[in-house]
Length: 337
Image 1: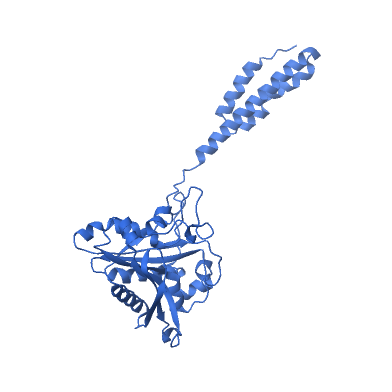
Image 2 (image 1 turned 90 degrees about the vertical axis):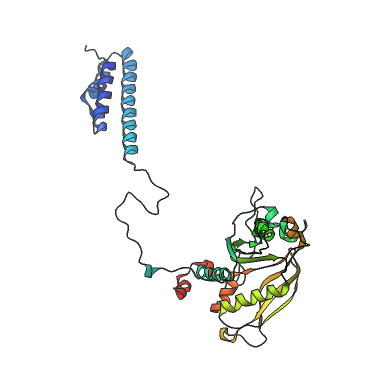
């Protein structure tokens, strides 16, 4: 009876797998077929041990084949540059024609708002989209039991961070960074702008995500009249016409006195005499807010205001449903293209 050196066959076939461009062909090698054919001719006492050895040989060959195939697949993968704006391994990129796209109306109008204030001498600072309790509430004179601190009104992460509910979250930083200007006899004049987030039920007049602009001015001589003149100048520049304004008392923890600022809806925008629209909240900065930023409230005073950008745009274009801005509906967006 013929004898078989399985170890020698193993060495030959594994070497063949390593060299072959089609390694799976080795599974049909005559040497392996011969070994399987010999199992039936062996004595029953030898058949089990020999058959096990042949099966182990086949498993070793299959493992070598899979390893080679995986190695080849890995070598074929071209590294992806995740920072690139498109697939750099492909051919030339065909860009969309500019006529097929346009800026979102909120982007356009926010840039216009920022432009007006910067031309008035205000520094423009983009707000944050995540902040902490101190800048959101503590530095702005919010009492510990103020309802805005509750979860039903303000979002919070598991770590306690807050997606800002107002751009006033930047006010403490602006005041603190501007102390050097005050010491030089200059004033602090800045706006902060960006997205804000509130735990709101969404309807035609409410959104959980929207844009705000906050303004701050501090000097030794700032007055309520300066604030009203500043706001009137902004709204008249934005709407391109003279406007009537009025205020009424309101409570905000970070200002004293606090006011709601309204304009009479212009006839050119469909308004009627006596039709007033509240546009924003404002007031003289509370002494506690100034002191928290290291500013002597006995020497300096200032005013602040904050309002939503969507409200400005809705009035300007006669938009009645706030939800259109976040809807991504092309029918709506194409009106501004």
